[in-house]
Length: 266
Image (cartoon, rainbow, N blue to C red; front, side):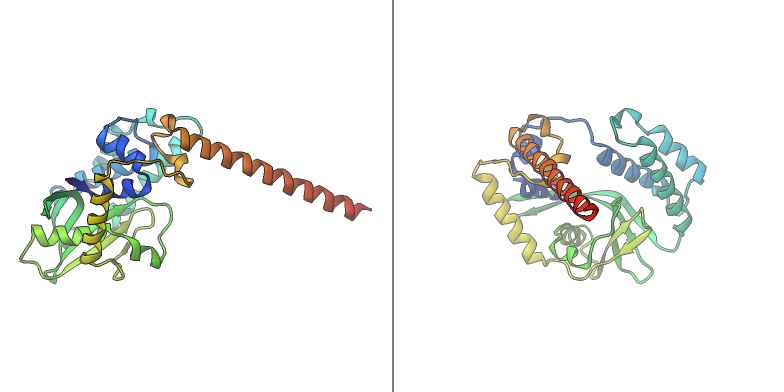
């Protein structure tokens, strides 16, 4: 079976979404968040592909502008907010990057791991060789909020990257795993991540579930951001019920406030 972290994460989130995306391969327009994150990755790859020779900032910003797609942003979504945020990310990244301090070995490095009859694939945003000789795997994040310390304990993406690094650079003994939160210009190298054994068991469990060929919809708060909501009746009903409940609660709170105000008057 061919697997990726994104596919396994999607199955965990919602088996029905996994089926539509990875088995039926139903195409959907990119969401603003997905488009924005993908473009920022492309821009940073453009900036570093000839490191330590880095293009001038004006050229990098021009590349960003040329690849911007206004049509992705519709309705109440602020195109300007996203666009301006991207400009700030690029400027901050450019000013903080020190060419020659580390050696950029790869950007957007594709990997394949053959394991127990399965092929696990993925792409690493950036791979550096540090002055100490260590390999540093860097995963770019465009999150608005920084994660909590406990969040890393449940993450399985970094252990997969460590496994990939051991496969690609078998002579490397030490691998540093780093998340670079671009909006905050903050790098975090967590140590409390899952083990290789935990990751392997997770993959085995996912394969067993997928092979059952049962893909029920798993409704929850993320339904509102699902690209397949337009064809998911369970997701629509969940959100309708949630919105109705929210309106009822607001009505009740407003009545309580009015009653309190009237009691104060009398």
